[in-house]
Length: 517
Image (tube, rainbow, N blue to C red; front, side):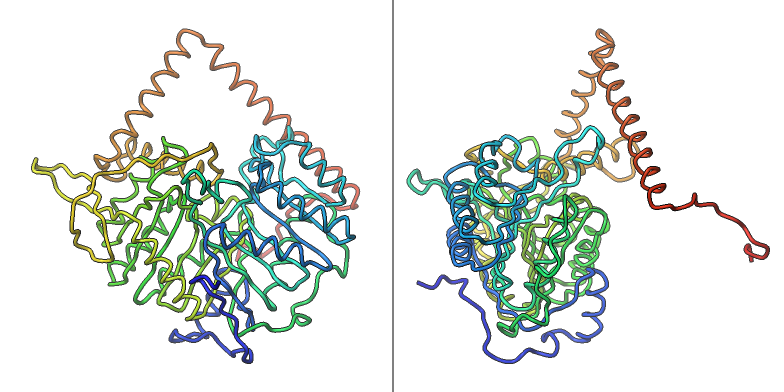
């Protein structure tokens, strides 16, 4: 039976340019330069909702593979879901296919054993771990491979926010719903960009893929008329950050965002506020409950500047909202692994599909409105006492006025977890709030009082420990400084050896006459 996120696969020729926007050529040039990713024509795209739609087609693609499988995911948990995917991958490797898997060290920490990975390797699967903790890099751990992508035979690929974990599948027999998440299936020339994105990470952690293994874009047969831009973000690249700001600036009617770990930096928050103040219908859907409870007040402390600009904020009432999507003006959509926070924009390897197609955007809009039916809108309302403001939650059915007042709901999450993105989002919000309290760069709001009290109490505890047990503080700090110093010296020695091995001379800057002019 077809789901409501039905296939959008065209049988016509490749279109010449994306429809639906004025000055599309100028926008395409701006988007291409900002994201560092060209717009690829001739693709078929299908939206997939939750694990109930994503997992079956992932497994079917793996089982129907004939040549190669590239599998990259932040979390590959050793549970019944992970076992099913592992068996499918091992079976194809035993059949002689090239099966390559990348998992993230932090994503798998405490979730997957060495025995699990050893069994995959023994079956012929080429497995690589991204960025394990090393003594030579004290701060390298902040860069993670947060992607969730599969590419099979240069024929079909998948990009999503879903990890391989039973939390995404839920427990229907116990009444536990799946985590809410969104992915896409891609067919056509855009598969070339997905495979090359995998190849760059593969080369960053080991020997590159053999020459000739990857197909060229020209060799791939068009599978529709959908225009797709594959944005492969890497640490320090900020391509998606620039693109997200451009989309906020270009939106004319609507900009609807879904994000699991929102912690917008000031330039992006200002872009959203400017769009809303200019009459754009800007909406943000975020989780109503966090898998790390202490981070909930951090998220709420960022609502006020959005609400005051007219941006509508909604909290999901289901088990967990993990989707990362955006849809604008019913002609532009984004689906992928990137959250709207500094970890995804700057620190991680991420992969997103930016789709310029009215049919895909309309389907995502309908999915978004369905999600709002299960969400609570957050609004600002003054208290009776002068000068105090608080948040009230109202149920919404798409209208700004609420029919009945609702109390906040506390939603339990089964299982432990969290992610580097959520931790980074929390750290960013914490740093901005504490910094504002110390420097008075902005007016603090009542919603931030609890957060500041927690930080202040924690700092008093650290100060007390330092007073009574100085070594308790000094010893870890000393060890950290020694670790950093030795790592820097080792890195300097390694770079010097590399320079000498290549026969490169030392770089000297020589100022010539007239250079100052």
